[in-house]
Length: 87
Image (cartoon, rainbow, N blue to C red; front, side, top):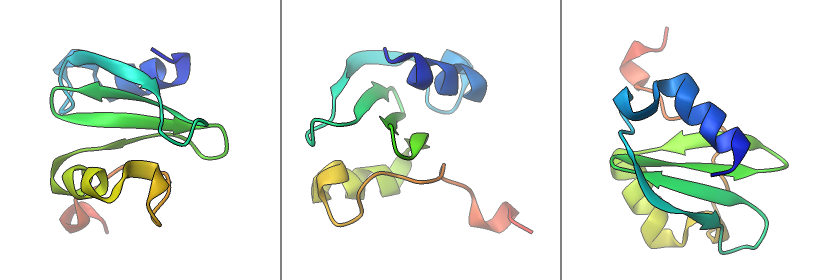
């Protein structure tokens, strides 16, 4: 696993986080630039231009159907947040 992705996962709580345990699915992203790691309940994607950010739930599922970072959305530029908790 990419060191930056591993550090992000550990910072979120590792296998006790909402992402859960690693699935062992990791590697280069389809665009040949970034890297990813999938976990039981989400993913972390890393790109040298923007860093490492997590996605999970319905947003991740929709992004996957769109072609991940190769879609018009590109890479995530922030972690997902519960909009109700923002103040």
